[in-house]
Amino acid sequence: MQHRRRAAHVVAALAATLALAGCATRAPRPGADGPEARPPSGLERTPDAVPRIEPIRSSGPNKPYEAFGRSYVPVLADLPMAQSGLASWYGRKYHGRSTASGEPYDMYAMTAAHPTMPLPSYARVRNPANGSEVVVRVNDRGPFVDGRVIDLSYTAALRLGLLRGVAPVQLRRITNAEILAAAAAAPAAEAAAGPSAATAAVTDAVATAASLPDSPAPDGPLQAAGFWLQLGAFRARDAAAALQQRALLEADLPWAAVREEEGLFRVQAGPWATRAEAQAAAERLHSRIGVVAYLLERR
Image (cartoon, rainbow, N blue to C red; front, side):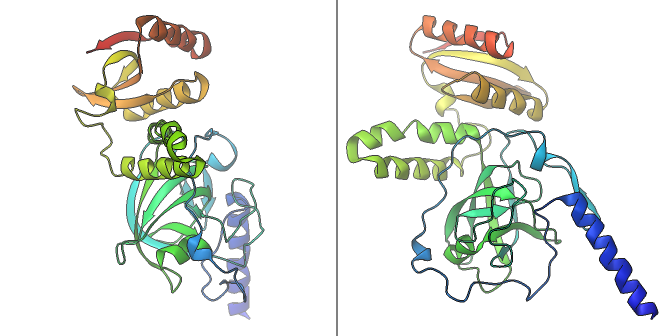
């Protein structure tokens, strides 16, 4: 009898925790999930998710939450994030149910869940055992088990060769700056070989960008000749990243990145071919988000 009362208390505690955490929380229950009896054919040829800039809201799925007795504080800034750890996957038990972002979970899409990554986000995940890599759209919360860093959709796990169980992976979040840099290469590719080539160019460029260090190399995009705007300089990377995100999403800039220099994180945008174009962009910045930018010229 005492054992039954204890079990009832545990179940009640879990139910309360799940209510706090929201619709995307999942308890680790081995054997309670798996593939459908007849998965669609050709899933191994499912293309990667194509990264695009999506607003990061401070509310909804990005609010602090609790799951299974632990507190989680999602990251709100557009920061790179690199992790190594174990990956799991979830399938038919959650297929069609709401994710933390409110979207229905599709086990056959290239998606994933992460405890603290901003929702939505895009990430590149690599299986070091076989070298396979995929790009997924992160739209859910989880996993909530020590050592696990990401919960993959069935198809993403299939493409990585992880359907047999939990296995080590390496992951890296793709930032908005990297997405913009990749998108800049798309028009030329489309003109040369059509829309499918443009999509491939974006995916390939994001793959390259995702392997770069957080700060651009001396000969990187921030050193290109032309007129640049410096939006601000901060001692904290989070503050610089927050301004970078606002500039990209609210001021319609072609490029904005955080550059670490002399102990400060500088937010810079550009380049523009003429001083007049850069000044027009500076005026737009001021009118839309109240930022007074400093004009730079690089030759």
